[in-house]
Amino acid sequence: MKIKTSILLLSSILTAQVAYSQSGYYEDALRFSQNMPAGSARIMGIGGTQWSLGGDVSNIAGNPAGLGFFRNSEASITLGYSDWGVDTYYLGQAKSYNTSNFNLPNLSVVFANPKGEFERGAFKGGSFGISIQRIANFNTEYGFYSDQLGETSIIDFYLQDAFGIPESQIESFGLTGLGYLTYQINPVAFDENGNPINNPDTYDSFVTGYPFQDENVTQEGSASQMTFSYGGNFNHKFFIGGSIGIRSLSFSSLKEYNEEFPDGPLINSTIRESLYINGTGFNVNMGLIYKPIDYVNLGFNFQSPTWYMLNEEYEASMFANYDNYYFEEEDITLGNVSATSDYILGRYNLNSPLKIGGGATFFLGKNGFISADVDWVDYSAARLSSRDFDEGPDNQAINNLYGSTINFRVGAEARLNLFRLRAGYAHFGDPYTNSDFDRTTQQISGGIGVKLNNFSMDFALVNQKYNGLYSSYQVLDNQNNNIGPVTELDNSIINGVLTLGLSF
Image (cartoon, rainbow, N blue to C red; front, side):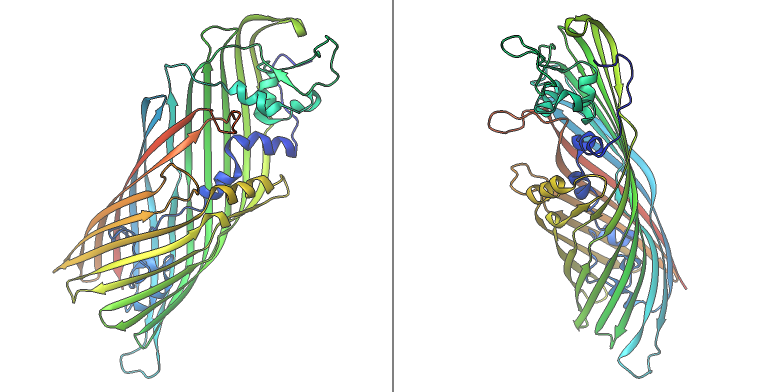
């Protein structure tokens, strides 16, 4: 017999695993592994190109070998504004969302210690740098609304998910357990001959027809890295550097999913999910820049995996509104019914994939330069581990869904007396493998700067575009294809950054 009012589910490993299955840990692995190049407005204006450039505060968290180019110490602060627009499409219907925020993308200081011009020895000095840099922005909102009947209901998901689970265990089975507690699915209590089944493990639903559907997802948070870095200069030909990065991460997600049935007996239902993740991680970075001739730089960079230690908090609630439906099996008239999950706490570790990159810069005398980067990342190498849940299925999903990408960037700077004009383009490969949907990211940027004695000011504007798919729930047909609702997301992010620098 089910309790008729709000219910707290017992906390268990099974609950933690399944309750979050609507948005799996394998999605976290990708979300927290994708970091776009960031830094000063100068670097952002040339598309994030930085593997073979030196003498910029972005080298602290980028290629630390570039710190060997500094002849003077420098401090800088970067101010940013981000506007994230999302256009969504579901059943041919469009909806638009917009999220904006001010932020502090970079705060850096470099202490230069070059040797004198006439000092002997191959080592010509070096620089130590410290920076706090924002490496990921999670602030966005998206969803869908449809005035057309959907092709499935989330009740179909509950029925498939509940198959084979004894009634004695179903209450602790995540969202499906909440569907059971709100009478949206019920056990098949009698066999074909009318005999009662002890602890049944198959389910059906008295709810008929398809619903109108809508959902809203609000995400907030960011990831930042504090980096300690050193780069040395050898004969003004070889520049070698290394760094240690300490990352902090905060991510929250609020989801509300609704269904409305035009014919009853279920009038409408609502699911609310709240998820919060925070934690820290660390990584190491090594780089090299070589100048074969005065007008050419060749760069190489190795970024280790980031080893994260993450904490999560999750809860869900479900509401079902019936039109005073008499449920004969339990001799109850159903009106407003609700159920709430326990407040679930968990811990897990995430190792993000490593990155290997290289680049070249060609200087046009004192008139500017052209620079290009390429790097390789294998997202299928991300790994999860936990004592609170079985990470095996999510690690398998990472292997099956994700692959390696080749990313490239190109940028240029023109020098006009005191002024600098910049432009750049970047392409980031699709991390999904064996998919017909294109999730590549395109980025264009431009900027302007001015340098006056020991003071510099740079501004950059960056536009990043990519498409994605969002699945509210999964229902499989006979060919094992998902026929649940899938919403297409067209993302357009505009970032404006202003860097103020002071040499000393």
